Image 1 (cartoon, rainbow, N blue to C red):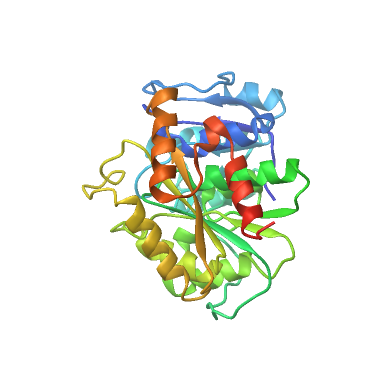
Image 2: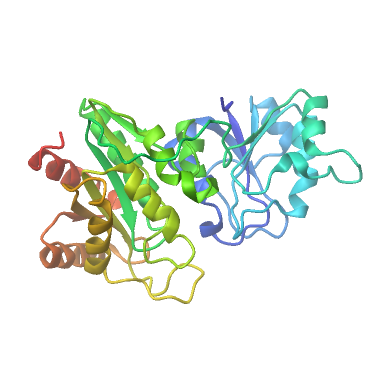
Length: 339
């Protein structure tokens, strides 16, 4: 059980793309954040007050959230003293790194953070790791309609699209359920399992566990890309375990190589075709119903031109959920019997 309000720690971040945890939390749950803290080398800021750990505690903060991410998901050495200070102030720690904080040593001591947390009666939430018992997938057909977001690359808008769609459907009175499969989604929703930290044999079983038979539409957050040399295994396991009836493909415009990799971003139609083909192993009726574009790197007119062009080329709804909402996807779901 995560414990807001939060102070967000962004370390020495120099670009917002290093702050997926922080920016996701601020967009979907700003009311849970009292402020943020950064280190001297950081050159970015957030749209909430910059505060000290002690001030955050006075403002009611209950948890210290590591809002920065890095390749490999490790806890950086210059974060440790500030994590210890947060514990000294009685704050729980929330982080989404692969590395477990519990085993790290508190600076200038021979005490682990796991021991330190116990001594200070605070909790370390390693939200990328789960204590749930996970089964191996069985591939058996289950009742209900499920939608999965997939992508041409990682960090292309899968979580954002899924959460925005959930919010819009709930505002229209349509019952729906969001399944978090990454650390940011778990931080926002308060539940879920980070798929990229699950042993490969159990990925599809994890998704089956998270999205059981349901009478309401289940929205499942996707991860990675089938075309990614590092993360394709996670994406395939998600496809098989989700048994999606519907896919929405997410794409970051003007990105020519995969993020942090020297591999080309795949063709959109090729990506749609392969995802549908792989999904039909466990759900022969799977179909792609739309394309979600992240157009943050272009102006409004260019974004609209791109959307119109892709919509005509692929004969399906295309939108940028941040700029233009997701009503086109809701209409597509209604048209194909998903709502």
